Image 1 (cartoon, helix red, strand yellow):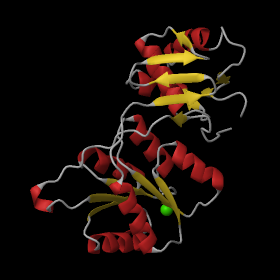
Image 2 (cartoon, helix red, strand yellow):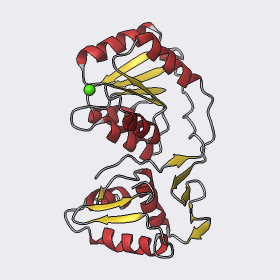
Image 3 (cartoon, protein in one colour):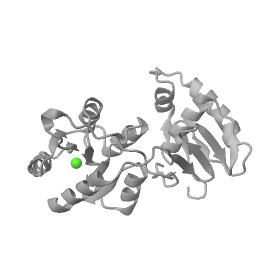
Image 4 (tube, protein in one colour):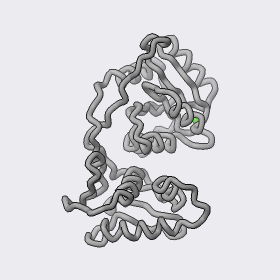
Length: 254
Ligand code: CA
């Protein structure tokens, strides 16, 4: 079962990238719209262009990620239901890569768990289709007006706290003695808490390598992590999903 990472919280909002103003766009804010419906995309592009923004469009998640890597955007308008890679994955990848570009989710999905999931994954705002362009524009301007804030973040699941700056992990205030690799592994699990992560995904994210089947290294490292993270405590956060992978979750909410 894949659940929204309800238990993850940030104690402060991450810092926005410094807005770069280059000469040829005359200080205009640069937006990326990731939207697969051609009509909506062109409507948004026209609206934001008329409002003075420089607008790029990506019609799927993969192209969106490519454009994010190559262009400095001030804000991303992100659709969720996209072909290939959906908006949740784009957002998870974006924040996992440490990019703090503001994201406004624009989607037809209006269930509360979806809104919560979007905000928990690090979106700055959430607007449900159909929408009035004037409201979207107002929300975008509001996000862009927010002052930059400190980068220091603490991620939390139940009594586990990860200090991302100090690379320190604690449970119930008790310091966990983790290696650098274990901390990276734990950050991945915490960032995507509630989501079952496959061995392959873990291997590729943490060891930065393409695994062609032998993911034993993942099991060995997770066993070691578990001995520090869970063994000394009665509440277990890390769960093995047989035949699939691992999930870190708040046992009180699971
Ligand atoms: Ca869509």
